View 1 (cartoon, helix red, strand yellow):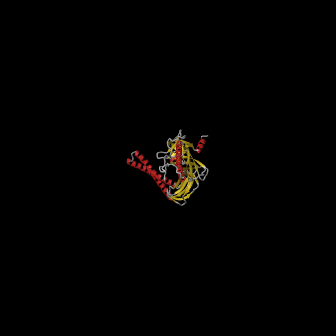
View 2 (cartoon, helix red, strand yellow; view 1 turned 135 degrees about the vertical axis):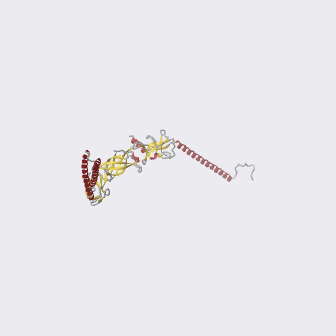
View 3 (cartoon, one colour; view 1 turned 90 degrees about the vertical axis):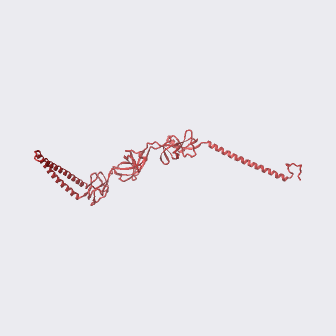
Length: 400
């Protein structure tokens, strides 16, 4: 039975009840301690993260910087070409007939006017003889007409003949004179055609082709007879691309490299330059003259021509990874004197692969950001760090 005199909080005299009560109190206290410790750890972690973020945000972003270098105003370009004779021509016949003989063949040197071949044309000889005979007939008639006119001129002075008869004799004389001139011109034409049967060299050179044999029937202007080329002076034509077209000059020296002559570069000069670009190829033709006194080089040889170019544009060259390509305009991130970012719009020149020419927008002393991050903002504080290799190169260039 419960004793109404005992306080409800009084410890029971039963030892088992007391032990359970103590364990329960200890478990509750331990749980409270664990919960409190976990909350404290979580709070400390959040505080540490917030402190780290505040610290990082207060520190400047480190960027690698490089510097532009002066572009090379002098550069060279190599273009392929084919050598040709200083003068080259293909020889054709002006007179029809049969080849009776040829005197020069491929590889032989010839002088101007030297006989190369002869053509026989018997019908032309007969036509020439007939024309000469007709001219002699007209010459006799002209002589008779002149004598008759002189007699009638004397008779007319004493009024021995009528004026009409006198004028008829004058007309006969003049007509005979005109007929003689026409006959003489025809003879000279046939004589010139006869001279064309002698095929001669038009200039000093070397025979590069012979296309005839004895007995071949030749028509005027038909079959090719010989090809001749001047080989003591050679020429070549180049087509310079538009990007270099304004940097070549007449009289400029060029170097010619022949694969068969390794290590040798032959000097030549630009003789003529076209006054316009070819609208199809967008290139400019230039002619180069190459002296060949020893005749070592042959017409038709493939060569490479090196041209030293002189650019009038003073451009800066920067690493390609400094240029930011955007929809508006190309930009470059720079670091000013207060270590703040400044984005500058630039005008691009030639793409040189790992480097790019900058025509306008930056100065040589500007510090350029290499590989700029997309998170960089205008005016942000940064810590510039010059790349070691570029720093060494700049010191070497400055003589430090």
